[in-house]
Image (cartoon, rainbow over all chains, first blue to last red; front, side, top):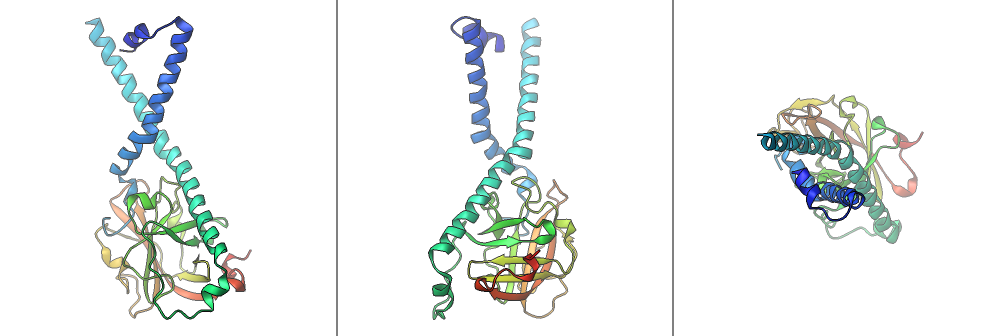
Length: 53
Length: 225
């Protein structure tokens, strides 16, 4: 799948590498900003109260 | 066949990277976010307090009941010297998940600061800045000092951390169960999770109001070096 992405990126190897880095950073950003904040409360670290809120 | 094996291994690498990233997020990034959020809350409070002069808030004996704490908003700063001389955290109203990501949470429905009843507060032990990381170190006699901008409230802890189950809501009763208190009084309850990274139990300590003094009178003894 990564090979497929690499083949479909435009430009020469340098531009492809640069685009890949930008893509990876974008994915990490989306994970940290949206996906992980949603997933984290589903784990037990938030349970600090005694009334189940 | 080769395509299947390659795709499968790429998938494994992706999942592994995801897990590593998530661990970084939980262990490190929530702390960074929470620290900045807590500073922000404390700055907000200080601004708010600086805007209305202390005298005008104290001198007027209010004929009305004081305004209720605003949901999800900070109303006090807590200091616990045992957890570190520079340890101070904002206390926000209610104990919902987003509130506890910005500071400590005051159980809605429990007493106001310094009033008769039980002023109950919950906080994270791990993640989101680890505010109550050293909770088990609390001992009878430790001071828990709070200020709402007009008054310093010094509570003294009376019990060692008490371990209980998450459904034990009696621990935040006005006269908390299992605390050893028998008569109505001005009590304090702090709760966090136990074990450190788990959610099967809760740790609780109780204290009572020992002294109050106006902010004009300077910091209470417990906070002086």
